Image (cartoon, rainbow, N blue to C red; front, side, top):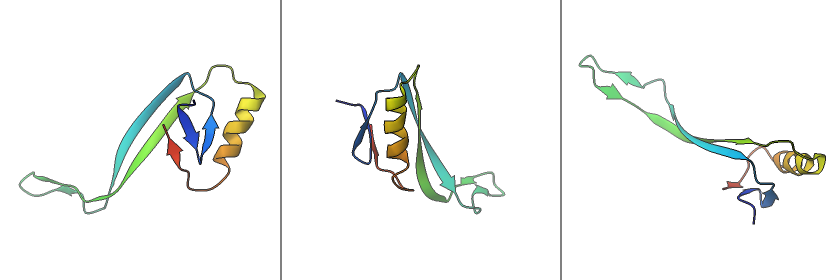
Length: 77
């Protein structure tokens, strides 16, 4: 079973995978005159970075076809 799927398509297992979670803040985010931090979070985003050693053309094709399906992707890991 693959550890990574994109829109239901199993992707070949990468050699490395890291996940980052980031907050997107509005322009109202900042500090008050008293120095207190105020953060207006607009959205929370995830960034998935994967690495492969030498990869076959067939596996590269599977990955690229899964990524080209839509603008928004459903990724499970």
